Length: 273
Image 1 (cartoon, rainbow, N blue to C red):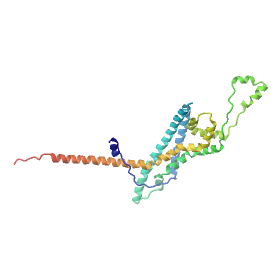
Image 2 (image 1 turned 180 degrees about the horizontal axis):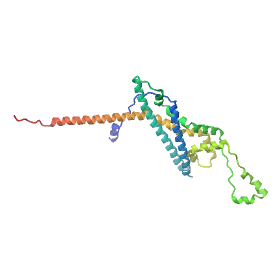
Image 3 (image 1 turned 90 degrees about the horizontal axis):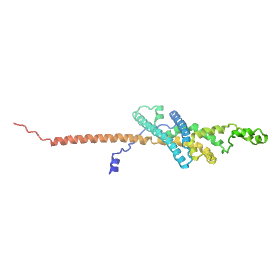
Image 4 (image 1 turned 60 degrees about the horizontal axis):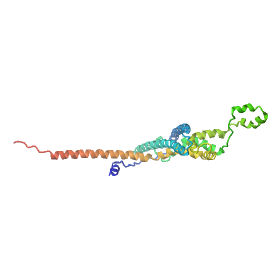
């Protein structure tokens, strides 16, 4: 009974026609700057969370770092849903103006909803990250184990030729190359994925480097998925408005019926002649 009552009182979506806009526009590029800013923020959050959630337990690493990724994807999804609903609302107004014979400006058409606009915006915002990751993916090589620093007490024995020659390799410094710089940049974006793999697994890190362009796209694509919800969210708004009007009309009707019933029950007054 309660479920049926909830379904009866719940608002049903009411879809209204709207003017379809354009997926590619300067507006989508400007919105992409916001996506870029969010991704930079997520990279900063990932750097902080990497030290907190780098557990030795694999299950805990997967869970907490997965929560970080879910949070970032949820922010993107919410942002896309909000923008999609706003664009549908604007597109409904633009269609009304067009039906009245008024001209719709090209800039207004850019604002109107298009189902691919969310994905285009996400790709524009993520483009710098994806290009860096793509460049590094072609240059990436499997990391090898490197020798650590010598303890300080060894320096006393390095004056002897037979010992200093054997330890000369420790003092060789490798030049900083472009792949090294790109590796640092790419892994800043992928800290949650790196934490899931754990430290020291060079085979899996190499695979992560090769897949980095795709992994970088996962979070921003949730913006496009959320944007697709725009028409449904706008339809729910219309549904809530219709439901509120029905409740108001029902209340007014009951009030009129109550007044009419009261008037019928009121006894007639007799006049003295």
